[in-house]
Length: 186
Image (cartoon, rainbow, N blue to C red; front, side, top):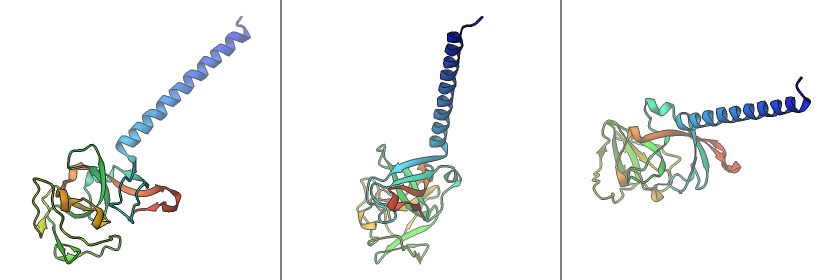
């Protein structure tokens, strides 16, 4: 006959095992979601202001970008200069489209963009060593042209050139913190 203490010990062990299994499942699900579905980002600079402010926390989804990106989307991507940073900018043009900067405005395929989200003037920048850009510039197939919304405070494709579409890791969906900035990104 089993004693009451023995039953309690078995129950405690079973409870601890259940807890550890549940914790492991939660950890695996969180890892899979963050790796393949959705990831939070902390915005470190003002290059996307006033759309996304310095210090905002943003959720980005990773599924749709596997099928390509579209002009107007705000995306995260690997820093083309080789640092371990993840950058965030708006896609302005995709492969085969021609970008031009005229009188502080951006045109794509000869049409001046209506950019109510952009602040400042869109002017050419001095490029990083090894990159040569002359306008009008045709974006190579398989690449995208990205620019920060805060044009006078953004090092973007005007600086480092177009980025490979495969380096795009996610599409920014919404700001979730701080509360006064919460909202869907357009």
